[in-house]
Structures are given as C-alpha cells and as structure tokens.
Image (cartoon, rainbow, N blue to C red; front, top):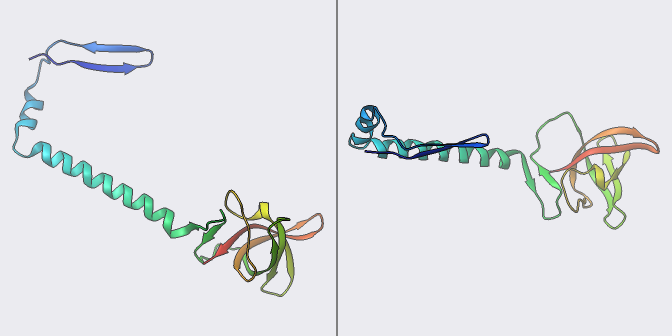
Length: 145
C-alpha cells in the first residue's frame, strides 16, 4: 500500500510516495475497536475546556458598554474610587469627585476602552491620580459595576 505525504518546510516542498516501511504500529492502533473515536473524543474535550476557560477569563474582569468604555468588576487593584461629577461628551472632558471630596480633571483619553469613550454623571469609577500641568488629573479611568 502506497502513502502520499506532502510536508512544506521553509521554501521547499517534500513529497514522499514510497510505501511506509513499518505500518504495523499505526495500523495496529487504528484497527483497535474505538481507538479513532477515543482520540477524537479526547481532542474534542480538550478543545471545549480551552474554549470555556478562554471565554470565562474575558467575562470575569471586563465588560464593554455600548460606548467603548470598559466596565470592570469591583476588584481592589490599588486605584482610587470616586464618582463622576460631570462629563461633557462633546468636549471630551469632565471631573471626578474623589472619596475625600476633591475634584479631579478627567480627559476622554484617560478612560480605558476604545472608540467613543465617555462617562455619565453619578457613575462609580476607579482611577489613578497624577499631577498634570494644570493640577491633579485622573488617569487609567474605568467604570465600576
């Protein structure tokens, strides 16, 4: 019985058309009752486990709102917490009130996410505070569920 194998390696293609010398081990395994089915079942289970673990990782920490702003679960990551005082979507900036009562400037570029990032008045947020050119500024801002 002849077998045809094509393997691409680098820029060359290797083709073997000679009969396989020792088909005994492969034939023995494949001829065992249920061996192919067991192999396919194991591969399917591995795929399902990897798929579930990958999709559950994405859902546990972050969720996207329709605006492109990331919404996070309330996990202590060292950032401060506060509430959005106001945010002008057209101008792309606003203020966040810290837990101690101070107001901190926030620019849309400092909001985690992609696309159209914005905040709504009264939203709970987490952020880091940096001393910018014009005073305190919120960085790495995310909405908390």
